Length: 255
Image (cartoon, rainbow, N blue to C red):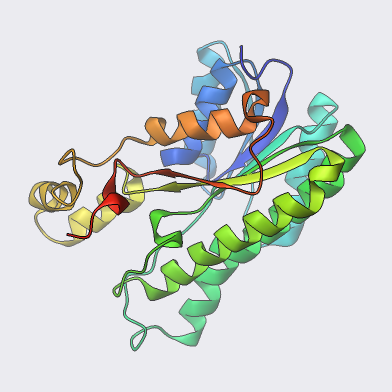
């Protein structure tokens, strides 16, 4: 029970990494508010966690709206009388070169991938100061450390998440608040599956993507969720303002 008596929330929790993160923390004793714009899938995800013996609720939350994030944090405090962790995980991807990216698309991906992490971190700090500290875990990316010519807007937002993480962690350690991020490689999530399907040959696309990794396969979201769990728990009490790469060794090689 590595998260026993911990309460908090996960954004983008209806599926993918967010769901696996929420599920794993609930298995380890946390009470978790699952936040997502997909109400049907999110409600089902929370019910699955409850059916397995965990404590979970669902809150419809559009992270592109600051008020929704504030309301989600307030609900955690109202339901469970505390606030110990937040996993700012919700994100979107834009597969366009910089020449094809419109101003509107740039603003949209920055709002979801970076501004929402700013809001989540900001309001989590306010709550955690009042409740005795806590852990902020952000989902960054392997693309927080390198660039992708076909994902310039996404790459920029994930570089921003890493920078914000390090600044917040350094600023509020004195208050007992830690802020770290995970930098995953490709995982078998709905976002990546959608990308494979768009190629017209999803099975081959999966093989081709996996070929870039030393193990010749991509990761499962639960493998990254294990790192999120570690960072959210007291086991990582002296890990702060840092990033954890969970990419199967992808960034260890040039070719």
